[in-house]
Length: 590
Image: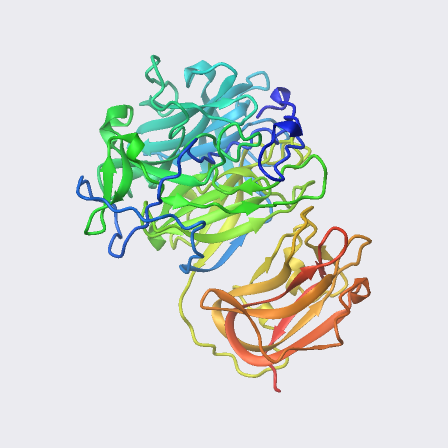
């Protein structure tokens, strides 16, 4: 959202859900496609065994499986590492110009990335601000350049009063570009319509049906195209696949429409993307496990259903809370790993999912909590999260994630990430291993290659402090949330035997910094965290502010095997947070 178009917050009296008081305006531009159908909750699709690839076109007897409240934790990845903030952009993060936000993107046949932005100048002059625009992005991260192509009425139209145009998805099919454009309310709380524009000259001119939107009544009105790589070359068949949300693009802060919980899937022949009658929607499975497709949008069933809420209770008056987790982001096919990755987000977190097929079964992959505001250049979350397929490494493990932060909200006070902004992300697939480490009281496992720090949240983004050997510094997990658990630890792409954790506190503050009770050690094994046995602490942890600052506690326990370890407990103080300076892990002699 452009700073000049910021809207005031809705009064708390308009809120109807428990603890859903809107205490400030949306940090302009948090454009995500988080939807839940405006009325009904269909049973979610759950791909049966054997449904491991695109296909299936039958109208045979279909099966639907009742939706669980949230997808289970996935087991495909062992570690997920993501930078605490954006470090590169187009042309660069930090040039303090209002380039815009959202940036759904695709990789075309000319080897360039094309992206669409909302509420900014794109790569035109400072007098070129528009609610929507399209740009060409050349180069690779660290050496990116943007070229302005089209904006405003050249790209789309508004169908409803008190709404603006916003991009939600892009697909590059051969040399043809498709752009999904939605109507988004000026208060960001409903998205009633969407259509698809087409360009055959790499984004310079666009055509669409001016008579009516392709999607209306808030149904499938946030459209995100599946990113199948350069020119859609990784697609397994002759279809373009698109995901959609009903109602709104993210949590509807004033509850005018239902909050997002469901992600839907559609397909359309590559040569008929703008023909609404050619679209088919995933509606169930046939007896062989192949998905069934229906031309009747009323028959669609969600491929992902997630009822979770994050940040149910925040301390600072004026901050949004109790947020749904399904939002406008992106879905990319990571071909080297043969995995589909959905990047969603909330006001304070990134939410990641993975699946072996476009229709599931989708599993929770990871979440990254950036905490309450203010944010900094070094540590910030963002919205409209996507992974551009062009920037995925040859082995599929390293990539760049795009997200945005608007200076008009409570996050960052300048335009650092209000552009095509990228941060590094690295994934390690899970491989079952046997521990190969032998007793060595000097070998700090936290310093081994591949170690990834894990925490409840990070206040300053100093995650490198955990295992750098300096016990006289501080990171904490203050995140403005009244939370019941806090933890500090590591995950690895391999198993270790361990029997000792050495935890050094960070600073103590008047309102927190210590564990209040139930401090213990857990290890991760078979993707599940469990308490260790035989735990002792020296010295005894006091469960109050006398625990620090920068005091060291040694926890010993029965030798155990795992590919992760953490200290976890209930945070203390009036703002419920803990601190850390260092966390070392050993397998020593008894």
